[in-house]
Image (cartoon, rainbow, N blue to C red; front, side, top):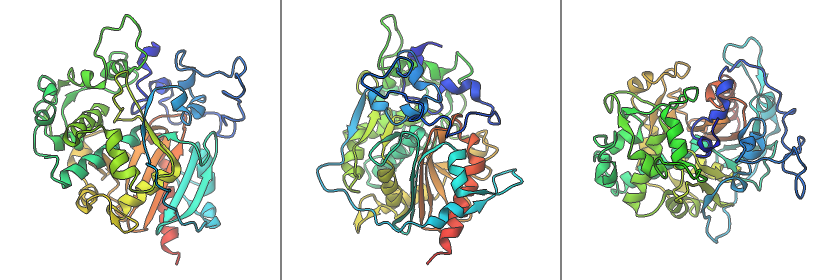
Amino acid sequence: MNVSLLLAGLLSAAPLLTAMAQTDRKYPTAAETDPLKLGWMQGSPPPAGKVLRVSDNSALQWPALRWSVVHMRQLLPTVEVSPGLGAPSPLPVALDANIDKVTFRPWNARQPMTWQASLAENYTDGMLIMHRGRVVYERYSGALTPTNVHAVMSLTKSFTGTLAAMLVAEGKLDETRLVTFYVPELQKSGFADATVRQVMDMTTGLKYSEEYADPKAEVWQFSAAGNPFKPHDYKGPDGYYAYLETVKKQGQHGEAFGYRTVNADALGWIVARAAGKSVAELLSERIWRKIGAEQAAYYQVDDLGTPFAGGGLNAGLHDLARFGELIRNEGRWNGEQVLPAAAVQDIRKGGSKGAFAKSGHPELKGWSYRNMWWMTENAHGAFAARGVYGQTVYIDPAAEMVIVRLASHPVAANAANDPTSLPAYEAVAEYLMKQK
């Protein structure tokens, strides 16, 4: 496997785990793969055999990935999402030890499982639950601590979608316009006759495969373009944007939901043009500083410094919880309307269930996709930002609950952890709704 194809920042599902596609395969446990116990990158310098590098792909192999997701800045170039110079906004705390005892039944399982057991089952690095604005649960394991940031993978897309929804609500971005109105460079690409809304909801018809088992899939070309450490003989598109100009059309726009990372990066380009600043700058100015973030977040970038809007964000557990609370409260934070309420309301109304049903997610029946958020369409109206290996910001409006999970599961696809995590979230929601 050519290492130059692995360095785009772990896209929406890491190619290194193609061979692990079978979700019923047994892997070493979370305890057995604890990155600190295994001693990776510890010492000055680390001893031979414990060094992880991107250049030889060792840093991106599971279980070494369990260390790397917390140390991406040591491996790849990044751009900062500054929290500004103000004091962090406090998070009220009222921990509830009984949450660990909450039980639920995983999909297709005969025996119930406790919430506490589910954390190790899903290789959880960090878990935080907020209920009615208070932190009621917080746990760390693996390499993650309260002071670290963690790669959030494709959860990044929901930040990009939120920024776009914000600009639409403010009249700075017209969702009915063609993509080329904002990015004329895409005139010869498959995006040319797509609307901004179709990009926001991933209903574009594009010739772009993220089938990692196929060495000819377009995802490899996108990875190579975004590689910040290109080999000297590389002759393809230079950077994420240059690759987007080469994407071809396949099918009709607007007919079906198709999960393609290039939509998120095209949307990042559109947002940057409409706002006059990069997604990193816009996220800092309009959200990170407004919610009193404790830590800077970071986007992985290509060799031109372009933020990877489809999967490159790294952030701390507390700040992701702040973001989740901001969305749960329809854009309000500490009495200030940080985001237009209309932007959050547009997210919550969901997308086309018919379009989603054509997407090949049979385990997510009745779901939809809107503004790069996953809408469960369950009785509570829960919706989520999701990334591979188990990254989640799960918002349950009825339960007044936000769950943030950071993880390093051995299987990239969320289908591997959904049978355990989704019923667990619903069980905790039901438990919290009974509390005073």
